[in-house]
Image 1: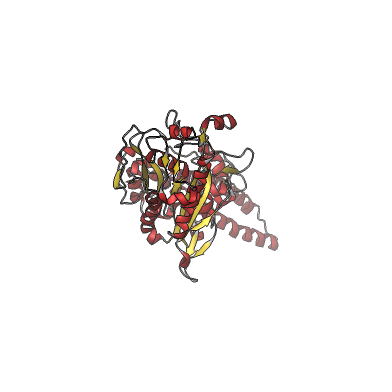
Image 2: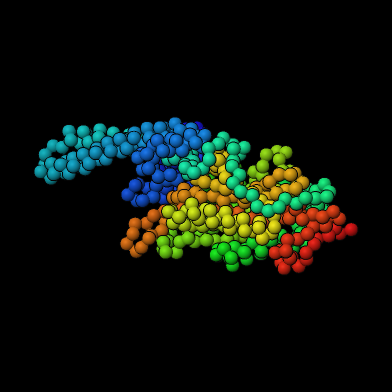
Length: 470
């Protein structure tokens, strides 16, 4: 994580220059909300006032997630220079205003004001220099804020990588097969319910076409997951657009950091969504919500598009890591004081799907070194995959506190007279459907090549066993 470059350009608005110079991308108008003054109540991804007041807290937070704590020192140094330059330019502008009035009075009296005018030209030249300096320093401040990640919650275990993540509970009985379990892609091809080869012909690698009972299984899982979350866990069902504008992707933190991991529509400020988190979190962007409505809980089904799709040689076969996959996403907008309790409930909501489908899983608490840039705390749910004899991630449940809400200007009032506050946002997978299909195939496989369908899913699929075609 390096120092953000300074910006010397002077387009019509400072925030536009800031983003163009640091990231070279078209800027959504929403960014203007990030760069308000403290009096406007809208700051940045992290509260600059809090960093000024408690720099050691932020330094320690960066150390814990193995980021560079000197970013805080760089930020405060540039911020102080910015404030000093701003104070000086405002002082000189006040001087110029008073002098302008004095010059006007002299002229009205017929007195010689040439010396005063010459002096004010020097002051005006200095003001121009300081205005440029203020813009340059402001660009540096905001550029640094863009690369500072969220601060881990104090309860997050310390660690350097995923190897230090902490299993906290297991559920379900791992199946004991009397034969060597096959990987899900072999099972699916034998059942003739997927076609990877023709998908590669039609589109490219890392795509799949479901067919027959495979297509029905995908659809059945989506309906089952949505019904469970809406009728049992109290979510409102949403069906979002699969394209989002760049403003929305900034709001959830996908831009600018992860721009190269998404599919962008050529020549347009639109992207295929990487997850329904983007449209669901931005649904109330720029709104002030009634605090009495919180928590607000949305469950949305969508296709998800990700161009990164993992490193070479990893998960190149099967349904685990694709460029396009379907998922039911859970998003919560909650009161700040309840967000960590809501995170625990979110994990339970995601886990309820696995339990209903009789799939063994474990819950992992993610350590500081494996947290994403946006997250303050995160749990992964990992489902048992018999063919490899390992647990594989099938859901991530995260608390972002107000990191996304600041970007999206998403606030609430506790009552009609209260000052607006930022909500806390959470999201989790409930679940990734392709990975759920893979888990059902591997855990439900039988010696004759057929696959037993979980009882809860039978009414949706219409069969209790999927058998080989031959």
